[in-house]
Length: 226
Image (cartoon, rainbow, N blue to C red):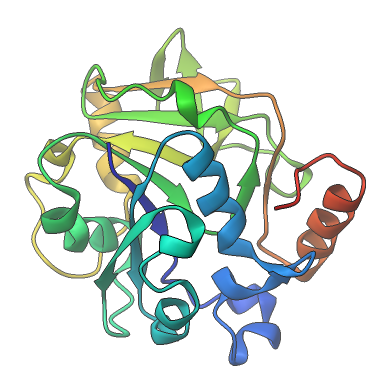
């Protein structure tokens, strides 16, 4: 099963740090942020990784190369500054990802989620990992009805940025810039999205404050250093 790390974003909320350094390469406890995700995936057996590139993408390619020194094989999906958004970026990478379900992980999260338990077989078009709502996103994104994810509900949880997708989710799409959320919401209406709630360690690094918090969590042993 291939894994894709989304690394094409500009990281506006992390400026000025991201003016010259792409967000995935921002240092956390002395290592680039994206290397934590790669290390976590590698330990879980995901050794074929696709990374999409746009803003300062060549910096990422130069830093990671083919991934051999990290124990993985990396292929790149170059968006050439087109900023295709999440949906368009995944669609652009489908020729590399293949015809089977694949894992997608946001490049700006850190988590102890047990990726080794991810199944290559999903019921429907997508399987999403949800987490309890953090302080900065109390309203959540989607609701769970058993194992079925619904677009709305009384007890919404936050989408973690971890999902398993079947290529058929994108069967009606055409090349260009588009968001993933509308595709997922339509699939939810059709009852074709399953999900789970993960209550272990998870954080997104969407601000300077949360970047520092991750540093602190690593120093406290809440998240393993690499």
